[in-house]
Image 1 (cartoon, rainbow, N blue to C red):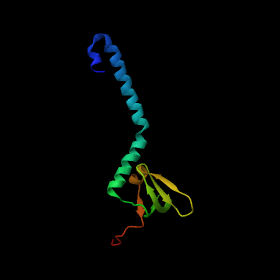
Image 2: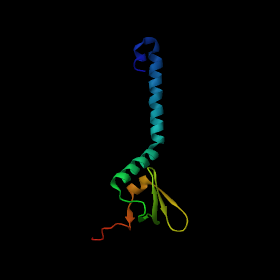
Image 3: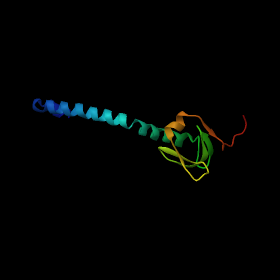
Length: 106
C-alpha cells in the first residue's frame, strides 16, 4: 500500500486501505485480548510449571485434581464426576494452593 501511495492517482485508495486495515487490526486486537491473554498464560504455566497434571489444588472455591492443561484452559476433576474449566489467565493472576508439592519444609 505504501508503494501504491507513491502514485498520485492511487494515493487516496492506498490511504483509505491503510486506514481501514489499521482499524480492523485494532478491533480484532481488542476482541482477541482475553484469548491471547489465556494463551500467553498457558505458555507461562508450561514454562514455570507451578502445577502439573495429577496435582491436587484449590483455586478460589474450586478444589480438585488437575486432569489436563492446555494453552487456554486448565481442567480440574473435583471427584464428583464433573469437570471444572479454569482459564489460564485467572490461574496466573490468582492464588493457587497446590496440595501436591513435595517440599514440606516451611
